[in-house]
Length: 344
Figure 1 (cartoon, rainbow, N blue to C red):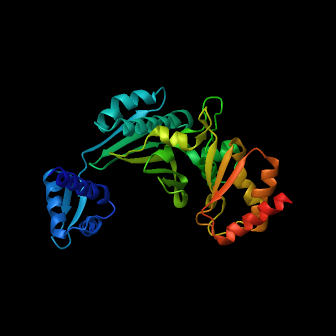
Figure 2: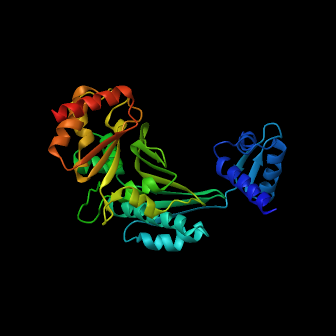
Figure 3: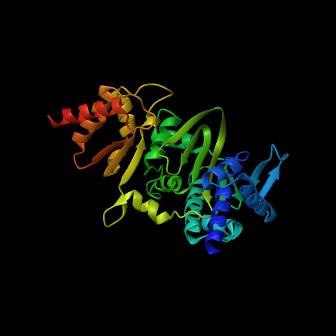
């Protein structure tokens, strides 16, 4: 009986974890995943509905399901003199409720880092914190009325546009206030959560866990301020320590490794062929000891681009370790050519 009960719990957890992305096909997907009949799946759905973990809409034939929202709250805060740890203890943690220690640890780190950014850097007067909890996941957003994070980074670092700011954020160790901040908060937060996004000005930055790409989309109607969105499964096995360790090495666990999404160095569908594009990609990566260039979504790179990254830059920084991943055959050939030239 224990085995049957455990399997039933696994089936219902699968439904809760996947219903958001498959509201109308969750019965078919669950039946296929566990090799059971649709009737058996419907039995589990009825139980979840009775427990008020799911909500059903529509007729039997066109029925859709969604997670019951257990908690949905928002509160505004004046940024002047605000302490992020007090907001965590008095507002966020009580509303998150009972969660595994590792999950609460990630929320504690990510929320306080992001709210502190709004307090110290947004140049705004007010922020709104919104929290929603379902049986499967929780999500939090922080929206301020400040300058906008991408525009702020662009101005302080004298970058050409907001896209360059996103590329620098993706690398890590970026701060506009080096005396008071390490520049690690956004980088590690974006890697801890299942989904992490920043909406600001004319740009939208998105990172999804276990997917190497950092996406930036341009908006037709730029907006003031910055909104940060974070989402994490309530039963995630992930730990903040594991994420820190992934990008650190050595006995001191220093932040000395980064993954750079090469796609952020280009505009639209342009080809990466020039040394100036390569130099944009390489800005500040000398702060790391190990750099992995992720070529996901890149079909071709020019000889000059590859040469600048893998020969010229490497020769100037012989102690650094440069690697590449997710490169197709054409890109790999160009990189190998540059590496070969560097050995001559």
